Amino acid sequence: MEPLRPVRVPGKVILLGEHAVVYGQPALAAPLDRHVTVRMEPAEALTFATLPATGAAALQEAMERVCDELGRPRVALHLESELPLSAGLGSSAAIAVAIVRALAQAQAIPLTLEEELRLAERMEETFHGRPSGIDHTTCAVGRPIRFLKGPPASFTPLDVSKLELVVAVAGPRDGNTRQKVMSLRAAWEQDRAAYDARFAAIGRLVDEGAALLASGDLPGLGRVFDANHAALQALGLSTAALDGLCERMRAAGAYGAKFTGAGGGGACIALHPEPEALVAALAAQGTRAFVARWKGKT
Ligand code: MEV
Image (cartoon, rainbow, N blue to C red; front, side, top):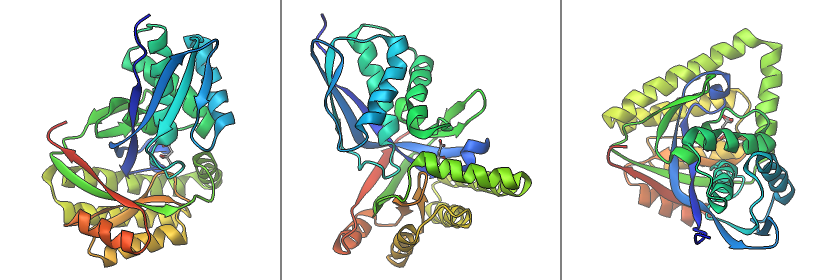
């Protein structure tokens, strides 16, 4: 048997367009240089030997869904994450992709990207109900993308020549992604035309943001972050902690800030002329933050 290589998959950050993406609008997302790692060792049966702190039952259930297709290699899986869990930074999507890759590797099953995405989506459905697919696609592709749900889902790589983003964690979430997506769906069912118009407005911000990103206009992109945050806030998806963190980052000189992911707590992102200085200012206020970087043509 070939040696079992560790599988590393990045987390993700949604730059613009979360939630509206579920309704067919475009969204921009990028991988993070923080990863989930699955290590494997031979064992009597397929088991989890090490798990992140939460979600063991959901993880087991999600894995069962892909074992039907991928089989059950006799390995013990050790799962480690550098990502803050449940912060909207793609830990579940990265875990899904990493487990699919690990199960395939252990049985020498070659998978195309399409197959990987389809299997990871089956796992993500356990965690999130009916996700758009942007999270696991970004984690699997490993480069900044503009994503459309479709069907069929599609993505195009983004031309990000240099981008530095501050990612800051506001705190625990008041519900998971599935709950946030479902409660918005219930509101949409009540008044589809009004909600579709609001999602279309977010879609226009996404395209404006993509053009500003391509031209390197960070102050302009920051204003689009602010507008996207306000649109998500108006949809009832933000919290006092997320709004307060965005305000603190703007007061510290950010060009703009928004929450990222499903909302109800979790993380915010900001553009700032001196990202490290913002991280230091946030650390002094007791807020966990880091700089995420992308360089060169993708
Ligand atoms: C969560 O990271 C992104 C959402 O748009 C849900 C989805 O696209 O599946 C909130």
